[in-house]
Length: 239
Image 1: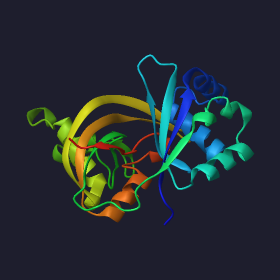
Image 2: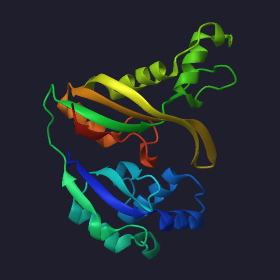
Image 3: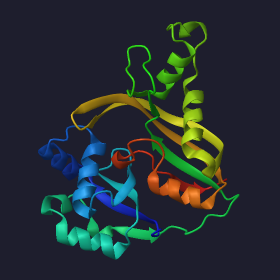
Image 4: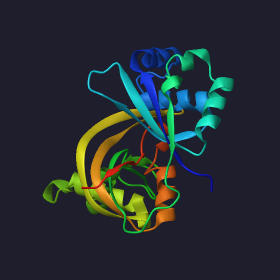
């Protein structure tokens, strides 16, 4: 398998929003960035990704994992990117570093992670049909209380989302700690469908159990919508 690289790309937010509006992406920032990266560096070349703006800042840094090195990404941008897309990106400050090829079992790492904790229903539940993508919290409430009487034994949201996170990380890691530092509901556009759902940011720590599986998890992201700004594990030194 080809090496994994961590990239950082500075973006100017006002030109980005103007570009997104001209392209008809509305307020769905993840959708706009998905198209910007695909058209500049190639489809799927830089994902999962995460935009990290400072409060009230006019610029931000987009971090992404890629399977192509610095020279290859820059070549595609020079050859294929549209001038209006390049006006949004600061390619002069574009930076790439190789990630470790192997991860030692027992390595403890801190992480910052933004996800959409949703599930696809395997069978109809309540007003939702089979195959519907719904909030994992709602899916659990419907499972425990199909009659809708959850007020008698309410489901704890953060606990449900933590269980969802453990399932999505899989056997690659052991989740040592996780704190939900942000929760909101956001509508995203996928094709001709608008999906309203949860958005959660986690800070936590994990221990690597399978180095190859962990590297694969970094590359694929955690949960759904990894091509639209969710699921990127940003690593930090553990305490």
